[in-house]
Image: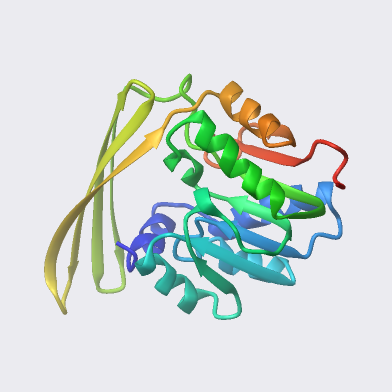
Length: 237
């Protein structure tokens, strides 16, 4: 999955470069001098490699060792940390902290959300900004959703089919992949993602509990929007 992750999503139309540029512009609208960035749950480095062109110093945090290996190859100049966003403790601070592509929804409840955002706040420089790309809200999620795509890149053909079921306050997504290429023939594998469906109000309350002043930008990030936040006390301790 780590090997085909970025390739597949880009082939389906996800523009990591454009998304990184939009987030960087929104961060600098709040903090024009922002130069250091930490991308939490950076995955294979898909956004991080573009952030590296827009900020003087970039770092990433990723729980998956396989994803981290891909990120190190994609962004060799970045400092990359293996770890869980729920226990973030790097002993340094950043002008911007990002968490992209709905990764924040792997947190299981509002207490965990608030404590994780508090750890983000504790890693901010004076005037620092947090940018969180949420998963779908509880009030906007679909009860049942099927998606499928087939793309060919070079000699490799990839098919992705997913089924997402809403169960209470969780979104359970089962994804199947078929990968075919001349070297290895046809391979099939599957994975499941369990994501929490927070309401918009719950996200905003969690930011407030974390000591952050938050604004929600509608319409961007494939319609999920983006949360932007800085310290509620004016940015300085």
